[in-house]
Image 1 (cartoon, rainbow, N blue to C red):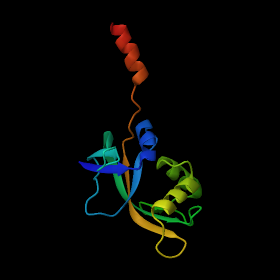
Image 2 (spheres, rainbow, N blue to C red; image 1 turned 45 degrees about the vertical axis):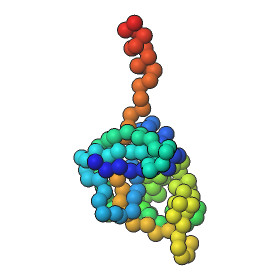
Image 3 (cartoon, one colour; image 1 turned 90 degrees about the vertical axis):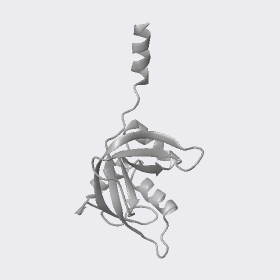
Amino acid sequence: MVAYSFKKRFGPPILAGTKGQTIRADRKRHARPGEELQLYTGMRTRQCQLLGRTPCLSVMPVRLCFSEQSATAPFEVGGAFLSWVEMEAFAKADGFEDIADMARFWWDEHPPKHGDTINFQGVLIRWQPLAPPPTADVHKNSEAAL
């Protein structure tokens, strides 16, 4: 089992099932397909919250290139370059409003040490999206049982 922590802003899209992937720097061990993931916000803090457990679907290499405002070159995912339309969908699948929102996040969180471009190589980890909790149906079923 491998745990990943996310910024608070990504909790709602993960719980809604609209964010089903994360981009991470290389490290000694990442999740493997089929392995259970634990998804958290605020790990190693008092605000730590387990969002859910879900199986890893895939892990593949990713390359991203950003300026402060947008992507500067096509993203490369699993050895294939994405079209600009696919990049926009990729940004949304990663929990962003659009590619510009994604670029601003990366610029704020991972500014380049030199120059005006972020060149990132790492991995893309995809998981089975979490389903939203069926709160309304649970109440209806509970009331019917009474």
